[in-house]
Structures are given as C-alpha cells and as structure tokens.
Length: 476
Image (cartoon, rainbow, N blue to C red):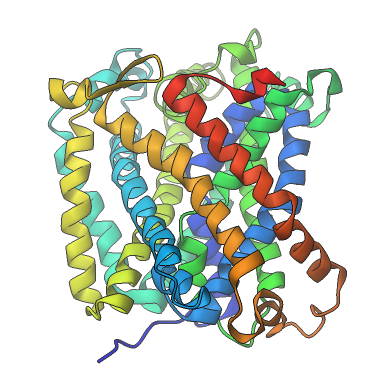
C-alpha cells in the first residue's frame, strides 16, 4: 500500500523551504570568497546573469519534473522518460549525490556548532589562534556535538513536510535574514568599510576574464541546489494550483539576495579591520575562511566594540551560518528519505531512522579524516596530492557529479519528456500567462541549446580540475 505523500501548505511555505535548501555555506561564505578573489563587482554581475539566464530555466525544469511525476528523483526520471531503465539510473545518481553531500556537510556543521558555542562562552581569542581549528577537528570530543546535530536535523525530518521542513523554514529563514541585515548595519558603521563596499559594488572590467566566468558559473549553479534532486523532490510537494515560474523566480531572488548581502557583510568587514588585505591572499576554501580567517577579523573588532562586543558579533555570525547549514542539511536528507517512502513504501519514521543511521556511519569516517585515522587521512592520491576520505566525498559529489546530474535533468526536460504534454504543459499549470510567453520561448530554447553545453563543460572542467589539477579554461 502506497504511503501518502506530504505537501507544502502554501506557496510561501514552498518558497521558504526551497530557499532554505539553497541558502547554505555556499551563499554565506563561498560567495564572498569567490567575489573577493575574482574582481568583486565584475564577479557579482556575472553571477547574477548566470542565475537568471542558466540556473532559473534548470530550476524550473527540476521543479516541474517533481510536480508532474509526484515522485522523488528516481520515480521522476523513470516516469517522465516512459519507464527507461537508463534514465532510472540517472535518478538513482540524483539520490546518491545528496546523500554523500550530507555526509561531509554534517561534519562541517558539527565544526560550526563548536565554534558557535565557544564564541558564546567567550573563547573568541582562542578561536582566532592559527592552530585552534586543527585541534578542534582532530579531537574525539566532536562526536558529542555530532549526536546533538543529528537529533536536531532528524527531529525536523520526522515532522514531515508541513510540520517539519516547512515549519523549520518559516522560523529559521526570516531569523537568518534579520541577523544578516543586523550584522551588515553594524559593519557599515565601521571606519574603512566603504573600501570593501567600493570593491564589491563598483565594477573594474579590466579584471573580467575566463577565470571570473568559470567561478561565477560554478557558484551560481551550486548555490541554487541544482543537480541534487532537491528541487525535484520539493516540486513533488508543490501545489498544482500555484505557479512554478513565479515561485522559481522568487526562490532565485531570495537565494541570490542572501549571497549578495553576505558579500556586503564580509568584504567590508575584512577591509575595515585589515585595510591592507590583498584578496588574492584570502583562502580559496570556505572552510578556511570560516574557521581561520574570520575569527581573527572578529577579534580585531575589540578595539572598536570591546572583547564582549566582538564575541557577540562572532556568536551572531556563527549562529547565522549554523541556521543556514541546518536548513540545507534537512533539505538534502529529505531526498533519500522521499525515495524510500515512494519506492520502498517505508513509513516516514522508518525512512528517517534508516537515513540517520546511514549518514551517521559515513559521517563518522569523514570526521576521522583529519588525523584521527591515518588510513582515512591519507586515503587516496589524485589532483596532485594525497587526499582524505572527506576530500574524496566532497570533491566527487559536490564538485563533479552535481553538474552532471543537472545536465541529465536538463536533457530529460528538453528531449525526452512526453508525459502530459511535456515541460511547457506542466509549467503552464497554475500560470495562465506562461503559455506563449517570452519566458516559455526562452526556457525551451535555452534548455535545448546552450544550457546543456554549458553544464557539460562545467562537469568536464570540474572533473579535470579536481582529479588532474588542470583547468580546461587555460586552453582558451
């Protein structure tokens, strides 16, 4: 007997939940890092263009796949392809990918909890020390916080779509926005902040090159949770009477706004407290910026607001990042849970408990990849160096497979979907003005022409960069 599927209670619930899935470390930290290292304003312009021209059509396609099929990614790929076994495997890849992303994302979120608690208890000076991060991630004490995180995340998932995912998003997303805007207002009052604002908002087109294009495109695609199966699954919970095109635009605007304001927070803060900052010297890693550089920036604020004030700012920032990480984790883990409910007819409780056990098992190994286990720390050689188990999982599924799954979804929507009249028919449901509009023509044209080409190149270049340390753009 099939288990009844959940649905969002309203269009707003869907938008907040979908935006919550997209808003994560990529928006709050990776985006400012990439902006700082790629020309600031020119990167911002390129990012916004790629979101509008490439990512929005792909997102509309993924949400439409979910609503039309009323299934998880496996069921959606299978049904909309007419039962093709080959396309069903594409759906399974869209289940495996978010599961493995959740493995390393769980570990990073545990680190965030530790830094949040230590900032709240007045240990900011310790956090700013260069060796603190290595001590934190190599300590067995992280497993205490690991258990606490799992209880939080899977309690939300046990609540289902309305009482769990949607309720969490309705609370955390507005809270996140208020905290972010509050921090920005504070930073803007500091001497020197205007230098960061100028770098971020005034374009210098002499810095525009192929590196900026590649960075902006990767950031745009990854930050919107495309290729993870999240939008397909959330689309299956979306009301038939609501507009997919309109909701997609709002999700993209909400997600991009958080990224934009995160840049407006971090870049002015860096320039205010370290005016001699050279953007090229900043870590290219989100992890490096969160746990090593930013605590030093927060500590340097004590000259302006005192040690307690600096600790409060650091605490609010880490709470902000924690909320974003939790909303993303919940969304990511809902994908394999939805698969078990749809395909195996498990109850939600059974599916959630199984996922909790499986993610915990692999995440424990990932957490041991930082010195606790020599085997997992020096797990495999590739990309010009010895990589850990954590590195392998993060690089393979977050950087390489993600755009490949997005490419497959794009190809299915553009060339294989024949159920119910196809993509345009589904997007017209709940949106009377879509059929025959410029948006419909653009979506159909883009998904059939340049978007698959771009996604294929992103996949190839990510594969080449991660495993062979070679950037295909250097050939241009």
